[in-house]
Image: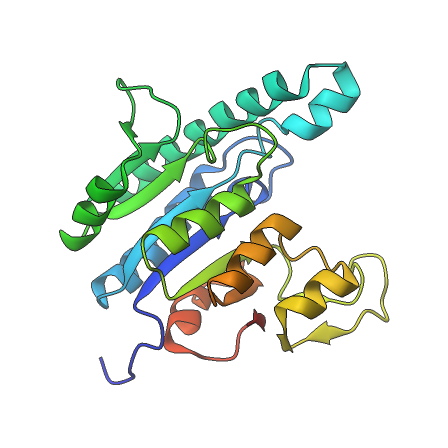
Amino acid sequence: MNKKLKYKNIVLKLSGEAMMGEQDHGIDAEMCASLAVQIKEIHNMGVTVALVVGGGNIFRGQVASKRFGLDRSVADYMGMLATVLNGLALQNALEKVNVPTRVMSALEMHAVAEPYIRRRAMRHLEKGRVLIFVAGTGNPYFTTDTTAALRAAEINADVIMKATKVDGVYSSDPMIDKAAKKFRKLKFIDVLKKDLRVMDSTAISMCMDNNLPIIVFNINRKGNIKKAVLGDNVGTIVQ
């Protein structure tokens, strides 16, 4: 390893959409396998890795609440369960490439995951295991973005790496607005003032309070996770 790691302890935030690959719904096995290989690469470089995974590819609580008239708390709990499915799929993919992995859930479900206990999580990381945090914070009305900010602060992560389908943060949606401007660097306060939707405002505020940088990058470009931990210029950094 010739190049020095810039970030040694990371939380990788994967949206449910990142799990879909080229599909329009559900979990894509090829995408899981690709993620596993990329995570193994940085794990072998000595990076401590924890993942927080969303569930929007299966069920999105806030949308379902509005569309189907579900009680918001019920819908959010259903969304938390969707993140567990994604977490188990990722665990399976990682273990297939011989990466020791533990799934830790904010909701107790002993048959499939360990309950989240901070001290136990820290011990797993010390032993070189990759952690997958599922079921959000265990509370309705909080997003998995907030979960990523909370867990990153708890495990003393150096950075949150938010994997998306675009290569950074733009002034507007680049899929719609061809004149959208890409930001290389942003301050937390500017993200809040401009309502740039990097993460929800609770997560951004928590990162700002804990001086925890966020890197937003395109997960579909293989090698971007490795480039990010090395400090190469990928995506947008918020700090």
